[in-house]
Length: 113
Image (tube, rainbow, N blue to C red; front, side):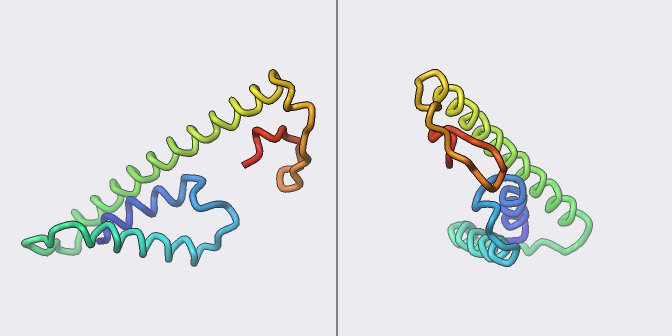
């Protein structure tokens, strides 16, 4: 379960999911619940893994893999944000801009999340 939690934790740290306004305790709870649900479908290992340097190295690699997946997810949503802003300006919807006080800028309705 630790390796699955490491990958999910890497994803949660770098991705925009579940949001910036979620507390750290809620993120940790989400990681624990998702890793428990993911490992409940896996078959039980025949031999328990020893806690040591190989397990730590595997956990770091799983965390980095999850962080890479989360970064790709973040870049995909950022690209959709840019495309929404461009299409809002070209289609005329961008004429009605909305002020976003969280970033201190005005965005078109298509860019709003």
